[in-house]
Image 1 (cartoon, helix red, strand yellow):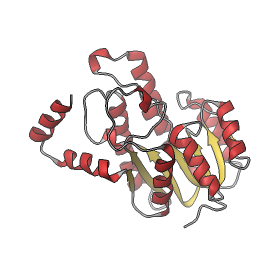
Image 2 (cartoon, one colour):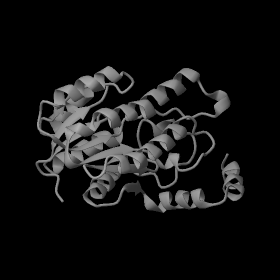
Image 3 (tube, one colour):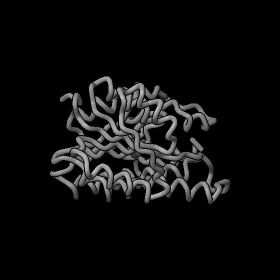
Length: 244
């Protein structure tokens, strides 16, 4: 499968994995629509990507997504929609700032729910809706709240949508491990198997060309966390307490 000539909408394209994905799809000859809050960054990226269409929006403000959907509904059907947008603010529960936690829930979970609600009609039959969950959503780890909780919800949402929207929409779940970005720069701990946004984008594009529901990477890290999730709570909680 090639993305040459395919219409691809990336929500959360201004930086990190989203921007790397835009460049990767552009290199394949895709026709891009780029969305995020930072309009200036989007216009700069669009110039790199052969004049991609720019549609600024903020998932924390549902009306902006609805407006973009209305505009795209008048254009040819899309082949893929990728929602990478997310906020991240690591903390323990006792140190959590409620306003920041609410904003993460608003963007990471409620924003993704709005994408799931509004965007599928924009896709051609068999088109791909790719939601970015996270390895952080596999199992509760110290210091990840509420980000990990929102990503666990997105993982679950994608599983539900894969059944609900089939066969017209091809739902994919993308679960990255640690990726170098302005979000992971906030971490003060060692991040195992961390990769660059460009490496992450290559994993995503390759995965979307395949058939697997979940695209997770790098496997040398994600498979270990998957194994941890499979352990009985009596053992897995003992291990995660040591991490804390």
